[in-house]
Image (tube, rainbow, N blue to C red):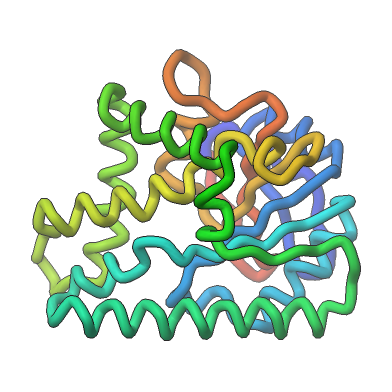
Length: 239
């Protein structure tokens, strides 16, 4: 993992901010955003419980946001009727919401809130940031390529071996990712916090684009990104 620094660890998780700037945001300890993907077995209620407890040791406040927009895209990729994919997506979103609520109850800590991504859809800040994402996807080939690569990998895992996503499936995957990207750009504005770290258990293909140098769509200075994962996981290897 390029430009990644191990900053701290506890008995359960370790954190690898993406860059020196991200590390500075992490060390401020103001806010952590935990993004949860429906249908991802990584996010068991036990792991979420442990992650929330760990997060409150290092951050003043924590928000958990689970995706519930365009989730049916991953199930449509596998084929079958659209209505069946929609029902399965609704079921997974509901199960994810239950796991989060159970984790919050079992964690037994304050300063933690939970939201669905759709809760922000009508918010002016979210709409402005989402509009910037869509504009950038239409004009920035580097961002577009990274987003499509991420969507393609996401969809391939749900298709038979050797089958590539159809254009409509790829477009749906890009929509899914685009709906989440405002929280990688400016969580402080969305959740009214001074600074924030967005975390996931993997480095995402878009991380170097949004948190690197150069021009184009970039995270605000008060926004950082870190890989946060269980201590039992293999450590990332520097490129």
